[in-house]
Amino acid sequence: QVQLVESGGGLVQAGDSLRLSCVASGRTFSSMNTGWFRQAPGKERKFVATIRWSGITVYADSVKGRFTISRDNAKNAVYLQMNSLKPEDTAVYYCATKESESGKYDYWGQGTQVTVSS
Image (cartoon, rainbow, N blue to C red; front, side, top):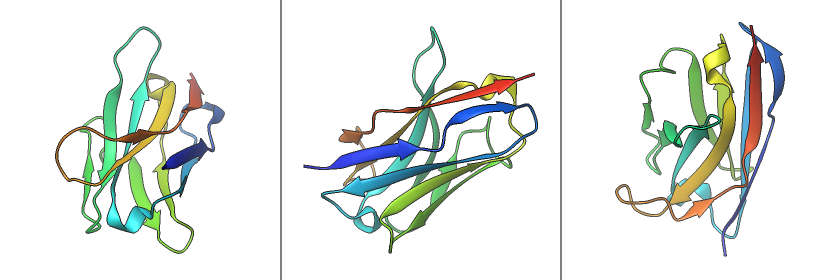
């Protein structure tokens, strides 16, 4: 069974930075395709960024140039560095992982709240 635990969320001001962490147990991230998603109040969950097992990264247009996804194989962790945060980045951020490069994500974390004040 794969378990994902996110951390690093919090309340910050616009323009600040945060780094989210996602630590896995039961499977190694280096062989998985892992992504970050976010869900704002009253809205659908949306894709933010992904890092494939190969290391290739993909970002949503709304975060390109501000967010960076990375992986530390030794710690079996995936990170989301968020810079120049905006109020519209406020959401619950979820980490998810899957074995295939296509299709649905198989495993999800519980989420971590990020709130950006103006």
